[in-house]
Image (tube, rainbow, N blue to C red; front, side):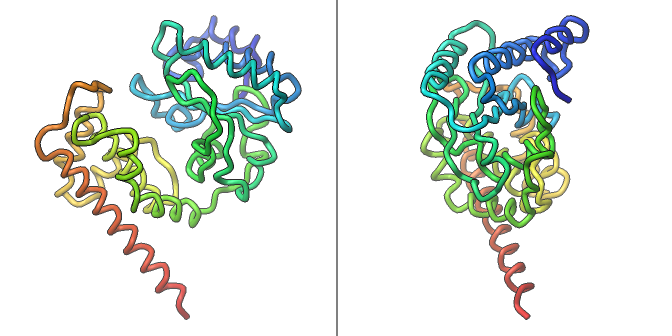
Length: 287
């Protein structure tokens, strides 16, 4: 499914919510597509929605993740115009203008997993800057884009992106676990921020889901999977996170006593699961 700007606006008039469940978000995406076409011209190879909305699980608590594929290197004037665009968008009224997040990725790098972890020009949600970051160039983000990405313009991702191998996804998930709490601590404190405690549990559920299935789920989807499949001892923690997800971000609300420690125990459980899986795989490889 792909749309030019004129068709995009026409569809918005006739059938609101045709890309996402939210007409106001669709309008922002239509405008962004117009800006990308205007600024990038022939350098624009494709534009896509990825992340939770591509997985069919985006809601009012989600960011809207996008990716723009580019042909060749962008010129300095183009980068300057893109910086101006991303400086202005978050200053507008409306929640989605502060919750767009994505990267500008060379299409030739998307065409090979050999370029994983290369840094692309990235806009973090709510920020008014572009920086070079590998945020959108991981195995799991490529898997979502290839398997479920929504095409705004350009070829469908499956036509030029290779399959992300199951062992790559599992290895990436397992590798993220030993430093997960340290990495999260660089920007959230799960002892003082209830949202941070919930985010930690949701992220761990996604990792466990990928370890088990070699696929990628949204945070809510992975949470529901965990509630169905993991040991009953985790249900109180998982149920608490599910029931409180709608509370959103509030820097003034700390977790209840014991909830941060429960999240740490859940991460430790995930690490043990990954270690067992790695040991089993190594044993299976021994002739």
